[in-house]
Image (cartoon, rainbow, N blue to C red; front, side, top):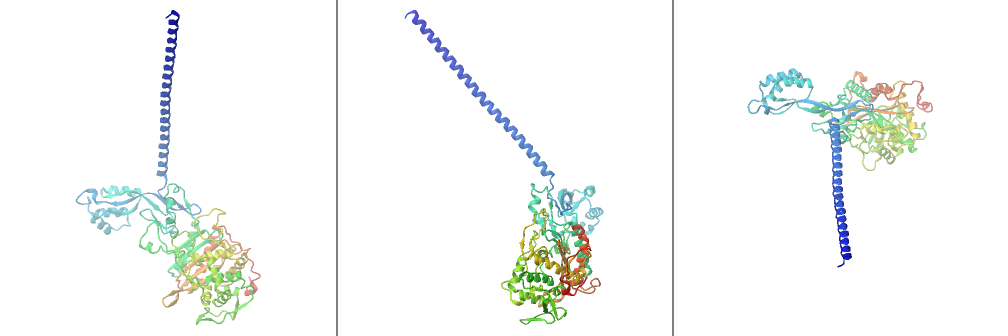
Length: 572
């Protein structure tokens, strides 16, 4: 091999070695870069995970803190923010004899411990308490204990006496609005009223921090309960019921059933009084149905001429049954006079001309055949005549017999009659302006306007005079119905009702005041009828609540009655 060939071969070998080295270095660099890339990716992922976990822990901590700061059960207020139901931490007095182990449950004698407890809680009974302590049975001795009293219990020095901290549901207004609110049992379950209806909302952490505003105004509620109680006690009635309803929105401004119960202390007497007379008890509400019958006849066109007269001095005999008035009013009456003097005979004739099909349909449109529309769980089903109404049934329903409904049914029906003719469901939720349900039309607006005149006339010239509060333009109708019993109606027991609205030149509120079995007393001039007991309740109530609801007295204005006054012989 020549020297040149050898030299060429050596050069070629060197080139190959350089190429191999370069390739190895590049591969090594690439591997290092891959390793660095992988480590960088893992590091970034680890950092992101740590950051995420940090945020999650912080979020959990915040959520946990917020839940601890929230009340254990949401607050209920009236429409103005006045607290009606609140939950807060409280102490209880618990007796656990096992804390001392076997043997005697107490260090001191049971009676001595009982006397020391009674010194702290004077309303407790020494004998009953010492008997319970001696029995050795664990359980509550008292559910509500103030912090300072808890310290005094600890100072007694008995291990068996514990003062655990618990959640307490408190009703700051006491018995007021009890049938609206209901109560909460030991398992934090709402019972009877809105506590039951709002159970999920009041206990859900997402919503329980926001108070729930009801439609009621506690100032109006207090006035309603006060006047109903005065009427009930002054006539020795067994019970009373009342409601104040906004005719445009259906919002309940106040609702009361007496006697009431105390949601702060549920005992047997309270359980006996939980039945709601406004929404759950059905009554034959008598003559308060007469304006609804006349409204239906005007709306259907069977009453066109108010000067037309109907015979009124002879009972109507239908199928062996006689429809009569409490006394002879006049030989004949026109429709306005029949309302002013509350004539069963004339109202029955008006219903007879209207016919059972149409009257029945109007009553159905007013919701009289269904449970009342409201959020409360206790809602009574009406005693509703099934099937086609025979002639006699149609006539008796026209003046409020043969059909039984709740006072709430009547309130909603009157609201439709005076607000322009639109029926809306009642609600206990505060509604924002402009959010009232559309409702359904029952009467023409012209019919409603005419009924507002007639309702006012009853209070000015008729049986509703004792409800006429000066300046508030009250209108309304009395109803005194005998209560049914075994063998027929009991003539000595009445349900006395006054159904009212005000102010009649522009109705804004309906009031129903009902007394169950009132007696003739000095306060009622020894009369048992609604004109003498239920109507005065409304007459006293309206001046109290009118200004609170934005209705100020004004004796310079009233609804125009000039076209009707000649028909009834009235002149103001």
